[in-house]
Image (cartoon, rainbow over all chains, first blue to last red; front, side):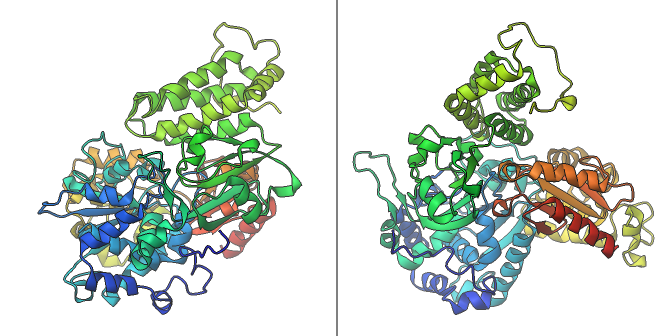
Length: 454
Length: 179
């Protein structure tokens, strides 16, 4: 651990870190040059596959394996979509990369496109990142000037265009097929899979969708080799043939109730406690922590006694969370009401559900209404069962929705209500002392008029 | 600046002879050029909507019809996409400055909602609305991806972090001084 050397964030403190000249001065694009001159696309792909790099966007699917799903004999174009629609609450690592080291992202993108024989890359960025948008557009222009993009890149015969494409403030566009639909100019309704994008993606063509941090890792894997990458992180469990391991460096975001919210780079497998204490200055104001979300809000909740949870692809799942997600930790101190937390989470997902699948659209909306009712002092104990019923029945896992947004909406509900049940019960009893066990229907509320009970 | 002023700010010859068209020839040309970047014209829907929205601060229905013509789509297809994204204003333009105050978890934990309420009170505007003088539109946003600076807001293209009531006062004062 102590001899870990950051690579993804190695350059971000340089004053001109976003310029091509500065990137080249620190060895930038040398890897691209070498790969284009001395490697075949298959060799690049195999190096990435050998590294066991897993996608950094949330799902953790092995990147090299994803690439092998592309048809080998396809004679039309192959498209690459770079997913820069980072919108998971608590997550900002891609923004840091794009603002402070856009050329690292582009070198990784070009290498990834070369490996997959893609001829056009659509760089899909969320609207809320105006600075990153400018930096990436400037960097793309600098790449065309230098011959890193365009026809016959560096005399290799390989040609690639990068088209930057701006989203319009919708969380669902981070789901890979939602992103493709949005790119095509439609509402971002995720597609039923199969067919997977690798077979039939953007504009009906084979398509790879990868996250910004993922392609940044590709750059370093091609530069330093798969063995270097596998020397970092948590090895695969030899007793579990399905475990692909948690290799490589990872960007961790930490925010909420810590002294120094930040984005840092460390090997996969850092614990939540280490992240908070060693990197974020501890819980703020000398208070104690109550809980933390482990990897973006959709991953659920860890209690303070679970902060030994390692942030690798298997860790959070062992603690009842959905997974590693984006490794964005948000810390809640002892003063936070879990009712307020869950209300915030439910409001987010009710707002961001795309509306395509009824269980998600209705489930997220009703969970928000339940939370509003509880906060307004009209909650009933059986509302907790109702919340859990919704939580257990919406999502890919129970098989009721097309994409995982609903699973992400469900997990905070399930974790909060199950891990902090007595707090919810106490709140309901305290704020609705006469009615908590009434089983009659509660009359409809004027939702606009409801305010939380202090 | 009002809608009509924005329209009038382009070169005079751009609108000449184009009667009641909403998109200027320059905007139409830009949209046509965007079409070369994509294998299907429909993919230009969002870029075209952004282009119009940036210039007019909203996308009037007439613009939807004109975009649809350029992209060889039904106006309903463009409207369908537009209405999916809460981003695009349609009935009226937003103010000179459109501000998004983050309400998601990291900001909420550090007082984001209180700051938002204070901001609206100080600017004398209902959440989501535009001030009477048209200078400011204040809206809530979901996570702006700047949680290390929570609570934060996006004012036009400027990210303002570590928001406090004093920071809101400074922001409003600065805008007053600028105008």
